[in-house]
Amino acid sequence: AQKITQTQPGMFVQEKEAVTLDCTYDTSDQSYGLFWYKQPSSGEMIFLIYQGSYDEQNATEGRYSLNFQKARKSANLVISASQLGDSAMYFCAMRVSRDTGRRALTFGSGTRLQVQP
Amino acid sequence: DSGVTQTPKHLITATGQRVTLRCSPRSGDLSVYWYQQSLDQGLQFLIQYYNGEERAKGNILERFSAQQFPDLHSELNLSSLELGDSALYFCASSLSGTGGGSTTNEKLFFGSGTQLSVL
Image (tube, rainbow over all chains, first blue to last red; front, top):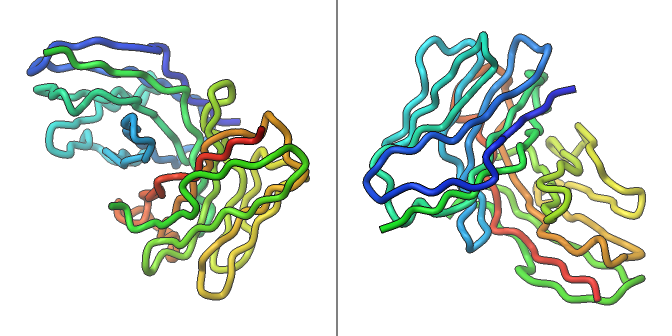
């Protein structure tokens, strides 16, 4: 069974600094995808970034980058130049089946990030 | 705006009652997923439908059921409600139509959720 572990329940970062949110995963599947979602206090889940297991380059989306280390089974999210609006809950998630239409995600427990002015 | 619409946003009901949560996926998305988010259990996958058919089941209770209609909207029915069913229920959608690994159809887009309070 697949598992996602986020070991940091809460993180603080100063505005304009970079922060890394940790995520490790466990799967025996060779083909999988890793996702990060942001959940602000308003409750919606916002897609941030995706990394496929066969992607050779680390994914980047604006200020977000994913530090993918396949051998260590880690997929850490790096947020550069933190902004106050980045304060939110961040979830790492994984999808392991590539069967058409079978794309449920398994989520970690989340990390609450607070950006301080 | 993710393009996924969930109604109602808030629902307050009593134990033993039955409620229906509704979800309209993004235009063109064939898969709908239901998730439950509670403080003690985190985000739990409940069930997935793909083009009208049940495709995957997660930790969904027997008191809960769902369906996806021909127009691809989905409903999650929760019956014999208990206090512990109080949670935020998310619907998500994805294209999931052709397989393969393009980034676009790998994303799940979430609705804003239905906050269910069982009193």
